[in-house]
Length: 275
Image (tube, rainbow, N blue to C red; front, side, top):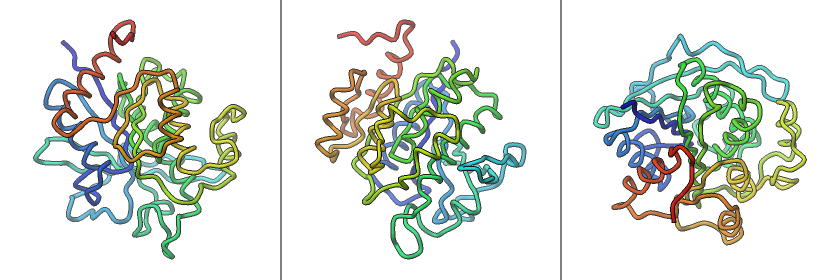
């Protein structure tokens, strides 16, 4: 029987960034379901704090070389890869000199929330989609983790909706409490419009703060996951009222089995969740 294919799109995963709840959760789920019966691919940004020498990152020439246009500006897409040896898993890194060279994750050199984080998120999500197409690998589920991946379900339901690599894919967005203070650029809607995305009904409105960006992920994903218990009340209420299947928060001992069962339900022929 052919293995189900799960694409993990995450803003971090151990051991490449410091051990956060999100990074640890993605590592445990991806390794666990891989060891059971799933075929997986993992993508994350190549932030400047990722130690390329220690983790033996190397560029994948056949996947690199494309330019992505973000807000009418060309940005070269570079793809790197590294292994998690003990897990026998490869992680693909989306890289770009302008967006990911700085030795910070989401803050600038003055330790302020970076003004280009909106464009970095767009570039990352589009870079994942374009690289998956180059790989010729069609996922059954695209599981997005963290606010930076919240644009992925939107792009898959809009400009990639008719692409054969994604037409059959279900999207899952897992929400975490580790958001950000402040706001993305208020020009974000204009930048999304440039890609041909209709923005009239986006939950972002005119305030792209952390909660609203996470709500965007919930708005366009097929199913939702709750990644930790530290989620703001308004955001949690939005999730609970979204009318979509939700995988609630899981303790460590049930994390892998719960996701394995949830994935299998998502992949049933009719997609119906039994009571």
